[in-house]
Length: 255
Image (tube, rainbow, N blue to C red; front, top):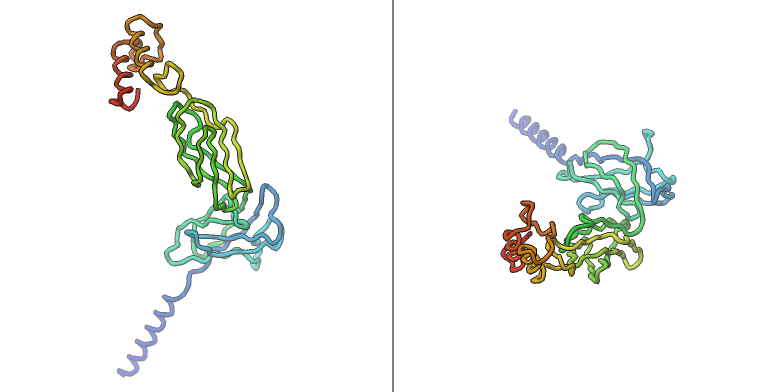
């Protein structure tokens, strides 16, 4: 009896160990795929990545379509790990990141249309404002570039992928981005920087001349400019003269 009981225990342990080793079912994907608005040609490779790790790939057999709707059609299988549940899957078309993502869920079958555009691309979180204007640029180039060359239009440059740049002089600036020393995108007159508040001289900075001008407004020796009403009480008074003076010497951060 003891021998039989020990045998059953061994069998149960073996079954438990086998069950825990069963891999996760892959997630399946199918849909259309375009490059610059046209069907991707046969031979194009679709790759899925989780946390930068390749998790599946598929080569197009027909232009513009990956996978299929029929039961036995070959689909893009994304094989994740135990800790990949609910993580984002990024898709790449011949190395270019595609618009559209999915969340990894083991055992599901999903239709997801993919689209990529070629070349350099970027956006900015601000395109207008008073100097000094700090702008965060975001690279949106396709093709997984490895190098970036930014020209900000005022003489400034950067080789970072997503630079943060400060414009200090009023003006309108054209921004250029070149990726991998080949594809270039130019956005003419993309950034507009206006004179900072309190810059009555128009030279792009608040200096002693601007402080004096507000003082002259207060005592009636210069025409009153409503823009000098920093306190917002409807008149240009001694409080405004004091405020721009404090700003000039660095005792306050903004007018």
